[in-house]
Length: 296
Ligand code: KIV
Image (cartoon, rainbow, N blue to C red; front, side, top):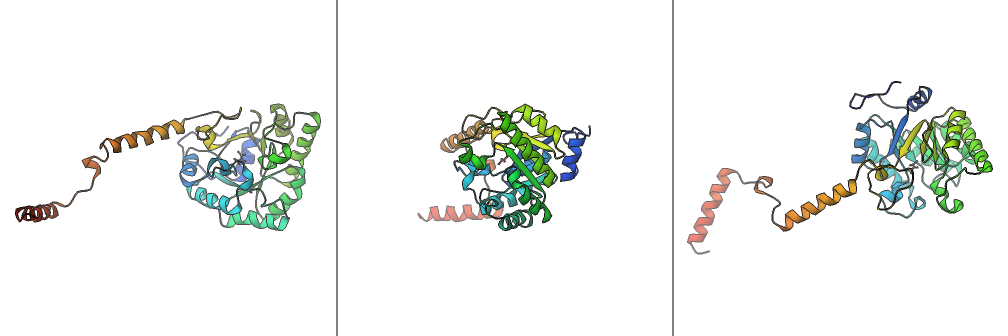
């Protein structure tokens, strides 16, 4: 195992690194990030892959689901994250409507993420029916991450956010999807919301690294949403979410303390204020004293 100790200088992570990690059973770590500050923190903490997920529709923009977010909105965030990420592999989610309509538009949107946003991988939801499109995007020299199982862009077709692959036919479909995308050449495959046993079978069957979210511990790596692990989502978390911090409490306490300090004249203090240079102050005092003496 070649785990880089926390705090050690790191090398640039590439799609080849992910494959290497699968080969050597070194778990791949992935988190979402949506802006410069979170991207820097995630990258500097040593995470292997940073994903600008279309989950930003909800976490950053307050939409109800991921269907409304546009290419331009995604690009705006990908560019900000690019400026914060140095070593991690940078992935960008193709939003709903940017690749489902026709393959020419899909390839050109994927190229925008690379050219304008600096993304190194683009992620596409869907199984075997996306295999041809994925080949075309790879032909344009753009690495692709697949995403199967509970695919949030299909929420209306699935009839809600439901765990997939619970029946024998569902398992067979997921296996067909995984194998088709592996053959198409995906750089990695995200497995979302599927039983642990099914994710383990897929992980053992395909050569591409699997990155799970709600897919159990046998995946080659794990991804979580930045806002989920920090309690910034304003609702009950999904079963698979583990909270690693309470940023909501931290932010609320800081904001309330600022408000209280301003209202009680505790902020700003003298040492938090700028002062005039000594000579200017003496001159000003003289002018004010003269005005006072003249009764003005
Ligand atoms: O949009 C997203 O954040 C995602 C992952 C968490 C896989 O697609």
